[in-house]
Length: 265
Image (cartoon, rainbow, N blue to C red; front, side, top):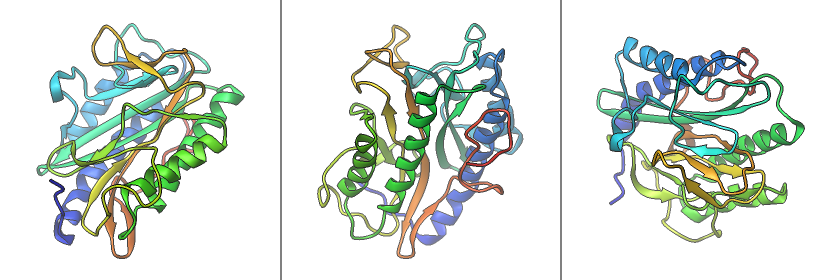
């Protein structure tokens, strides 16, 4: 069942979105060669708790950390580790979620560690733009397929592939609510969008093929061909006035592309 939120409830969701973005932005600013990913996780958890929230991922389905940190060919659900030290040229996908007053915020961003390759930079820029295209399609009267089509058509027009096995989702008092929001689809297909729906749109786009498998840790998803992947996500509310991004802090809904800088995308 899709849970429609009232305008008041959408307002109540904004603090969780803002804290999720703050944690994401602070972690992104730490990304540089030589930093281990467990340190990123510790900082994110500290920020979330310091501001009165609870990490939405820690313990969710048994997940052991407060953030997902997926590097290079890892698509999603990377587990932070002291033994995973970031290297020059890595691309690092950070997914953060915070719970505030019972409401969930969920967002993700792929950051550059140092200077990325030309290919990886292009992949990230297009994936970010796929997120923007998906958000623009999230208006009352459209259908879920219109969001997926917007993402898929832009990604494939640029020569990239779209992950099929992992998708966006509804967000509310639970991290994952109905409906599923695929990053592929056909215009005019699927659930009709209506004001009061809150969804996470999260393109996961691959440089090579989209086929993937889960690592032995039972969480981390990697591309079969070893190609890099990018992941960008915002939680949005569908309103009669257009999509409203809930995962934004005082600096807005977008992060810097480069880790360790304040430059905005």
